[in-house]
Length: 378
Image (cartoon, rainbow, N blue to C red; front, side, top):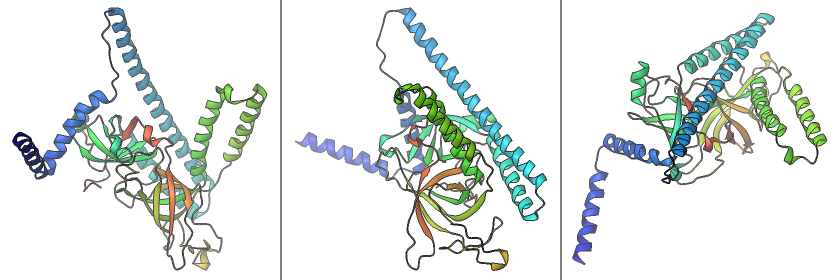
């Protein structure tokens, strides 16, 4: 009985000692545990087989898989840069065509912000997700880059507040940098707060076209979901017609601004975490347009016109504003799922949104952008 008491006493003393250790030491200790855990996280049981040929085949298969993944990443990166280049070309063409000074200023801003994003993406570093704690599934994951990669690049990319993206879609932000591993805090984490605004128009349609193209490609090879070849062909033709209609040029409009916060609880592993939007209004005019009435969307300055425009709609694209000093302007964050009813006397809308990455919980590869500034992490 006394031995059991002594064991509990030793354990309690050890826990008390760990509790008073400096945060820097405990973070290093946590990184070490992750380094060990990540080695087993993706591994499957290996059974000893005497066949040397089988072992060689396994090694070749592993190397081939790595090469395929590297090629895929290269193609994805090239496709993304090509899309951004095409977008820049369209903006420049619109600049030449317009004679309206307000429109010209609008296109000049778009060109400037797009060039800034491209510059950041040119210095991005690709990383692999190596560990994800089931208890914090929608809050954090660890990636296989750290301070050593900064030394190799001779440029600081992996740092506190470095944005983490997939294409032009926001995934999260670096909140701890280790020697070989870094931790990413996801946009779905309850403590995240991102400054965003509504972007409605061609940019929104581009995102829809990408998703539609992915659906069409999958349906071409999924014959089992159709009753006949004729039904498959008819469905694809309808989707193609829809695609052509969406491609019609639409003017972009920047509307309500607000904040987007993660809504997941730390100990909850959900496949689809919604983001909570708060404080959305357009009370003050800015370079993107005049202020508008909260309920009607009417322009408050009658001299600038009376054309109403709903400040928020389901399906609207939410993009970063750059006003939080952490994320560059124009990154895709989420699509509005639901706009809450405006209560009596309220001065802003609340809403619910879903990440523009359909399967955020399955992301295995990301890109880390250089930080906009060196400051405190979230």
